[in-house]
Image 1 (cartoon, rainbow, N blue to C red):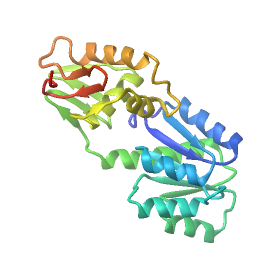
Image 2: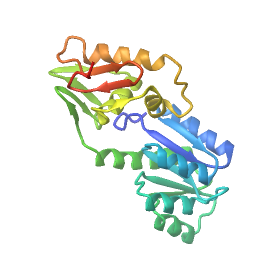
Image 3: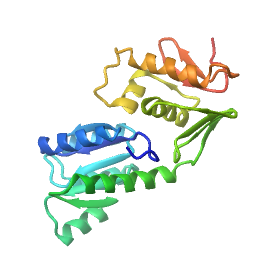
Length: 234
C-alpha cells in the first residue's frame, strides 16, 4: 500500500459484478475500505449519505447512468473525487463525463495497475488538500508521512490502528458510534455486534494515552467513542 495515503474509504459503482468484485478485491488488498453498488440510484444514495474519499463510477448503469449521477452529486454539494469508467472511449463521452464533474476518466478494458495509479493520484490530491497535520493537545498525526507522535515520543501504529486514529482525529470532539467507525474504517458490511472495534480502541488507547496526561480517548457507554482534550460529562 502507498504509505503516504493511508487507508481510504472508496465507493465503487459498477453494474458488472465480476468487474466490481475485481476492483473491490484489488483495492482491499491495497488496504482501503471499499463499498460496492450495482446501480446508479443506489450508488448516488450511498455517495450522499456516506463520507467517501473517492468514488469509482461506471458510465453505463441501470436506473441512472453515471453522467446523471455525477452531475446530481455535484449539484447537491458532494465534492468527493470521481473516477469515471466506461466501455466507450470516444472523445465526446470523455467530455460529457468531465463536464458532469468527474475528475478523471478510464476506458475499459484497463490494466489494474493503471486503475491503481489513477486512484493514487486522485487520493493524493484529496489528501494534500486536507489539513497537513492533525493536532489534539500534544498528539499529532501527519497524513502525508503517516507519522504519529505524542509529546516527543513517536508512536508506532498498525495500518488499522492508524486508520482508526485518523478518523477519530478528523472528528475530534464528536461522539462516534460503533456503526460509524465500523463503516468508515472497515466498510458498510461490518458487523456492529463484533467486538473488533473494542479491541482496536483498547490497543489504540494503550499507545496514545498510557503514560500521558490528559487521557484523550474516551468511551461513552451506550453511545460510542470520543477523542477529546476535555473529559466527557459524567
